[in-house]
Length: 447
Image (cartoon, rainbow, N blue to C red; front, side):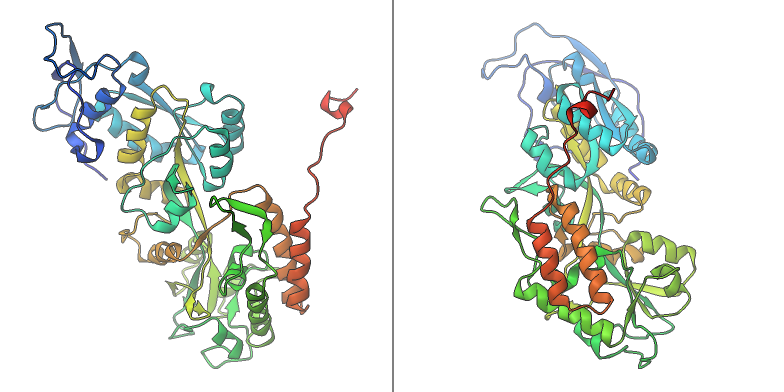
């Protein structure tokens, strides 16, 4: 974490000199940049400043005196608010404290639930916070409502995480944490990981065909996703503007059906377990199978179980890296915020800085988004996997599609024909039920 060395207050002379470009500023000049952006009194004139000046006393961490004079900010810019899930308050507060020390601008951290935050923002964004934290699945609805401000992603962030919060070439959120699927291997039972998913159909690499080779929770739709998308299938296709097209369903394409046949062959061959009274993680710890596909929640369970395991990317499928869905938690800046320039700086240079973002990720039980993360080798594969992963579509139809795929995967694992199972899922996804509309009596609260 960045060392914070508070120094004595520094006297800053105020004038109307334009600020330098954002990308060229050093961290110890961050105060100058923030105040310059929110100042409203400077003009485009190239003339010398007038004799009228004022003085602002602030606290800064700079070890050398500022070299640029700025206009004092309006009062609204001296305070910003961020909404965050309750369990992230401590981690977000660390970044807020560093920002306050550097700039003398207060950051109010407010705990709030995801659903409440989104509903409030959509109902009246002008009464919302300057910044809020939430899943990447909010992207479409936030941009459609015009309540989120574009932001520049940090260069350290893995591309898969950035893609999850990018629409039509514009990035709208700062990724803080990610989740995807990786392979856990029992190092004692299996010395060498399989190189391809297809090879699992031929039997377990350990040579023991009497038990299942791969463990995958029956309700883990994300874990089954590589069989749909690995050969070229998809859930929803993008439209001409790079948004998701709900009427373009790809779970019954020839490529997706071919992936379903591979899944069936694994079930028929080496076997694939994960249902029943115990979880897939518990069976893996007990040594029932040498391979497990799971997410960061699985990692936490295995670490507690003291299993001797390694973490690695999934085998290839169709001679390419197996894609997995990528989930991202991001920080968003309210487009209606009067202090959004300050908010953008706080998000980009503090909250999304690896020293703070990594702690937020671990606080969520997710993986860091930064390519260079190396404190825990168990998390490297999650970051690498996100490079070849696919962001989960950010339209509301996705949840219903996920439910239908769960039914299809359960049918395939039960021995049903994969083509019929996936075609049935596709028909259901193309014809979703109409949303329930309360009758007039219910809408009025009943009698």
